[in-house]
Length: 325
Image 1 (cartoon, rainbow, N blue to C red):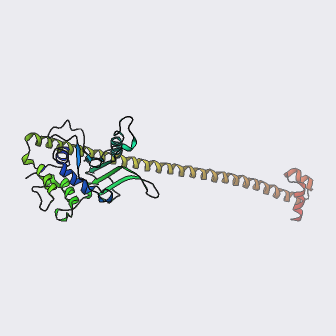
Image 2 (image 1 turned 180 degrees about the vertical axis):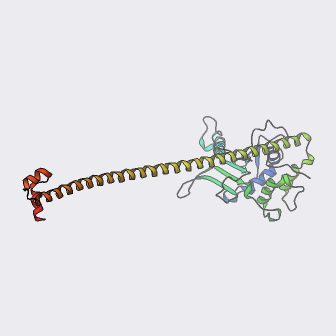
């Protein structure tokens, strides 16, 4: 017994977005969405039900199912298998677009119904957050007062769901286990809810035509190729980032070395200037001492102070001081 990989658009829409999917979709949504006052979905309408097996191209790495709940709220359920730049903005844009396009020209704003964007991702989206299911709403920053409940973003990160079959405790565990693992199972596990068993039954490949299986195979192959491309791109970007960081550090090191060299050159110039001054002062002092020695000799010979001053360049006062010395 083999089952479809539910993470592909063909299988996901066959289980949750085709004719007859209502009970399964109600059960799944009630298990992962917390409504105020523990309210539950009792009925819904699947928007534009998916007709198996036709697919128009394979350019997308995600699939969505839309449903309008019995209270008027619209839920957009999306299965995203690949991460890409701008994903968070696209999800927000899609939710905001579905919210804003509800009104026809001239209709009142109070007619707007809430939008819930439920995104199941097959990769780590919020690595710093340990929560399996993350809910986002419009809240006041400091007091966390709810501004409006009309726009809600819910994310389920499948890599964070690690429970084994024996560890399943509730219907939420069963659905997430089914979505993540159905494609690798060879039998329907025991003790599951009726709706989850129904999901296994409809995803059983034994009851499918060659055309349906071919569509599934091609889509799965496309996703595998896209994942490999994404992984190679990520490796290349990481390598480029590391090279850029290495170049930045080398440039910083060169700048520091250059600054150090400039500082050393300044110190060398100062030292040379100091030595030049000292040499100049030394020569000056040496010449003065020679004049003094000559003056002393002349004075000893009995020459007068004025004559000695004229011959040595010393002042008369300095020459007369020699008598005291």
